[in-house]
Image (cartoon, rainbow, N blue to C red):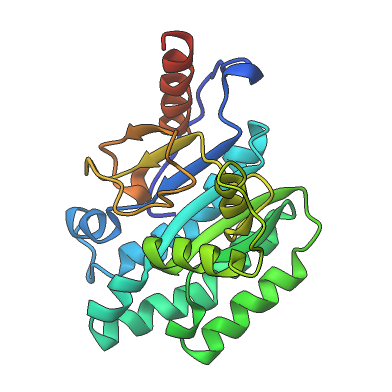
Length: 239
């Protein structure tokens, strides 16, 4: 491993004070690699992708069965260079599905336009979605993701339902969005010290608490997750 994680004693908040659905913006992969003196900043992307498996295990151990993770936006696909994109697509095709399958717990959902990805990457994600159906945990990965387009598509799917009242519309839009059965995100964690959420599931996270961690994503530890959960619990106790 390129980063070390020590054991520590943790005291989790009671279940009532824990988020049901955690969102994560895993930022800082390239900066972590540069700070660590890696030969290529892209190595950070591989370590970050592998680190997803750690996160899934930590959430499962805390009885948090709904997670949404920002992987790659549609805008990033359009503006990055071909070589860097090819590397990211390889990770999305290989490492990411393998980590989800290996968990044995998480059902994979995708939010975003997979037509922006190469055929092989789309096929690998589609296979992982099919193979993980009926698992108890629900993981939604934002890949080729455009927040405005997601809401537009949800509304478009509702257009044939002309009998919806104004009161029913918000719940109907929520149900039409991609992802698992629990769409509303309770806690959003962003790593790397950036103080913004970059269009991360804006409809689903409209009422979420936001926790900013100064750690780069590959250096984010189990202890850092518990700090975020404790921060969430404190806010719920003192609204």
